[in-house]
Image 1: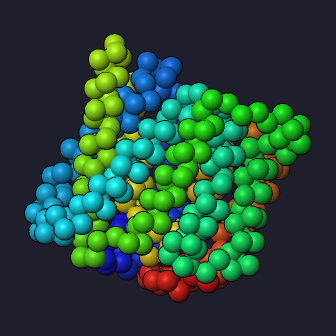
Image 2 (image 1 turned 60 degrees about the vertical axis):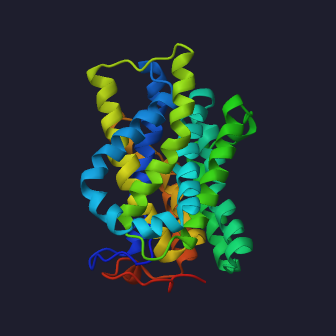
Amino acid sequence: MASGSRPESPFVSPYVLLLFPPLLWATNAIVGRWAPELGISPIGLAFWRWILAFLLLLPFSWRSLIDDWDVIRRRWVLILFLGILSAGAYNTLLYMALATSTAINITLLGASLPIVMAVIARFWLGERLSPRKIGGIVLSALGVVLVVSRGEWAVLKGFQLHEGDLLMLAATLCWAVYSVLLRRHPPGLKPISMLAAQMAGGLTVLTPVFLLEMSGGASFPITPITLAVLGYTAIFPAILAFYFWNQGVAAVGPSIAGVYVNLVPIFTAFMAVGLLGEDFAWYHFLGLVLIMGGIFIVTGLPIGRILGRRFGGRSGEA
């Protein structure tokens, strides 16, 4: 979380914590792709998931929000901007892209996120982009390409841009800027306060856009399935994934955290094998090896330290 203090858990390394957001975002991509078939618009899903997430978080965060109000009041511009980039823009653009592009295009374009984050962090925050980091990022990206292409050159050769691809690029840029800005978080702000304030900031943008869509005749169908989709996306890809991501980025920096995003297609493939009965192919295994290899190279840490019990601050940066 973007707060002045590092995560306090004595049991979880940030390098382990960062495994959870891509796992949850993989499920979010599947749900987002499925939502239009249920009659849920991208804007409607983004709006209602964040409304529900905020209401679910409020009972646990209201005391912290009161305690941290002076910090929130002084740094409200930054907090609002973080909320607009994440809860407001990124998720809405992602859902819109999923509804108007292909899974292969979305995944390939999303693979550019670690590179974009590393470049922005280099010029904005002055983080050193060493040859080792560049090599790890490239290796991890190759793993993504291998998985989404199923190891077939013809799939990449037939790559074509779709309407939603520009939306995905815009979403990627929003998330990269958001992640880099987390390093300039308001000091002294508790993680749960930051998350709640960030959600409120995103909703200031989503609300008028949603109302405009509703005025045009859009609706949100109320069925057991749509309510389950809403509840799942609010709790897991929203609250938990954002909490883990913000904590991880605050601990190790955006250029290191960014490479973890490339685990999304691997987790998606594993889910397809486990839930849909699809075959686990050689390119899944090799893609996992390349992506994890890239992560180990970028972090610069042996497995023992990555699985270490305490957060190592910035010791993993190079």
